[in-house]
Length: 192
Length: 85
Image 1 (cartoon, each protein chain N blue to C red):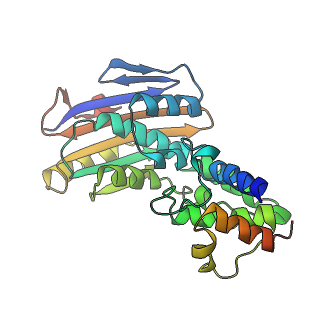
Image 2 (image 1 turned 180 degrees about the vertical axis):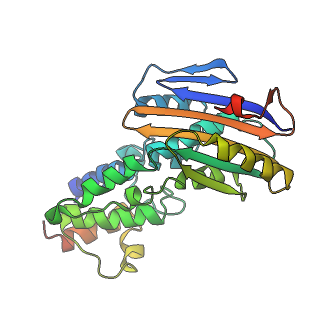
């Protein structure tokens, strides 16, 4: 049996960490919320401002849940429904008009959802197992056994699982860390 | 030239999302890459697009970028000499 040691939810300007209020933003729209939370965390990571919104969401959630983490062998299993739709649409807008065809390299690099895994891995210097799944709803029936497998086989010491929805100002992050010890059993009813 | 340098600083801050940097923070001869503003390779590509979009300058040889983008001073000189709009 494995356990959930930490979990976090970010939604509509509110952050709940392990079920307790952690942060309440004055802004419900994502841009203001993300900047305010970044400043509250007192981070010095200018690259944050260059990330797309999906990466910012995954970055902030991971930053909080991995506070104090010393383990580098942390697998990242992220998922969502929209992939990188926000950046995809932004990129499309840049190339829509043949007379004004100026694709932005800084936007284009975020037109894949698994870049969010890369951003978190760079930040925490993880060289671990990772996967980004697309699904209509949180794919617990797949992620539960896969998480158990990664831990049981020794391919990871901890697994960070996350569901990151990002479309315009509708955003939601649900994230939890699975390891050998923790207060909550890692089973279907606790991750859905 | 001074006006162009100020405009370039504003445009760089805008397109590269340099949230904590103001025009006053960028000195004309500060290196843009490495120790200076800490820009990276994606930023370099974004600057090439900026030159094309705003000034009608197409860099045929990306290797030119190293010299052109070494500072605001060199960038402004290049833009002034080569702009088509």
